[in-house]
Length: 104
Image (cartoon, rainbow, N blue to C red; front, top):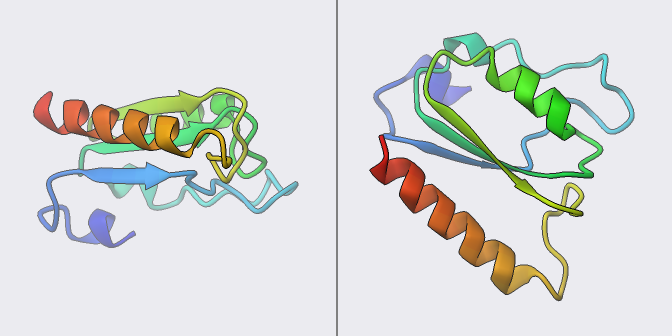
């Protein structure tokens, strides 16, 4: 929300497992500030995230007038990582964010 209020604060945002709504309460969306977001934003979301699935995230990103990108971590929930996937997910997120920032 701070970036929506102060668009010159940062050059880009990295949002990990953005909670679109509380678990099992998709009617309680947390998207009111998204149309005010003018900062390029990279979202990383697990494909099984109970606080915002892929389709929900894709819809929410359409509300944002700034450049956005969505990276999906297949099979991951809200936590994004497990003991086996930490290095892989970390490397993927760093690589995606560097490419996103450089591509802007």
